Image 1 (cartoon, helix red, strand yellow):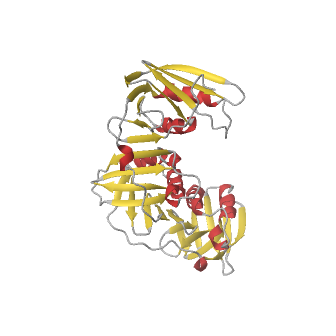
Image 2 (tube, helix red, strand yellow):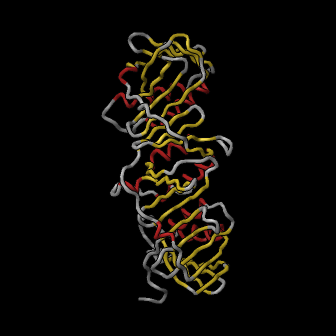
Image 3 (cartoon, one colour):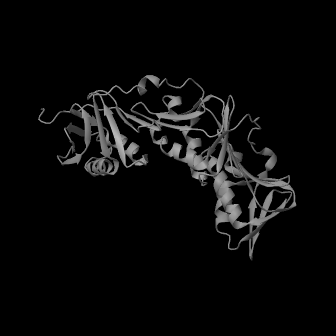
Length: 372
């Protein structure tokens, strides 16, 4: 194999596919990136058997061939090349010779025939969505995916299409994040759970805007994201996702409209007093046109702050994990948010008027001020 390309294209391609190289594996071939110039295009591929990523880079192919190179070594070498034009040439011993200006690198590789290729999966009608939209949807929900794998379904997000509307749901047993968007192109109904790892890598790679599209294909076992010159293939999480419909009926006794930044900044200040693991709730006391927020740390430190609000319904005192409320507020773009609460033991809903987002945060028990 002998190919020539720019350093810029090579670095970008290696960075994209490196996200599918496993951190730890007993299969040495999975620690490699495949450089495939066996056809009329230069394709880079990595695959950890759960997520596979391939991308096509521009360049010239003088001799066709294929080789697998250690991903860490390849990434380090290409990032430090001194010039812009790079030539990669391989021999029968699977050694890749990199030439750039006056620099030459020899990197031992492996036969490309031993590589675990991304499975060839038939495509059905695509789900078409803008890169900006899918990136925002994932960013605005993924923090609610469970960290542990005690329940496998909680380690992914539900992608559900009904009547040409995409709903994405994440939950971890303490909170729920939901984003809903209408699709511009007609799409078949579908319901699939996508692993958090896959979605994290997707939003790292996507850099397009509202006019740049992603084509999504769903099969019985896989989901495929195609955009620009890149394809991401991921296994899906099997099983029946949680029924969340009954959670979404908002029966409330108190509705509060509040400036999002003021509320977020207040909780952020309160969190300074609480060490990680203390599990100290922030107490929200809503009376008439004001919201009093207070928190008391284990060392006796205490903060109290008052925020102006617009309230409908009854007064209420309720406690929350401050991080869970902050996580939701950080990804909401609106200037004001609505909070809906029923009582101190029922979930709080943070939502907009048209239903494009819903964040549900479960309350926590607390001792009321003055209690022993």
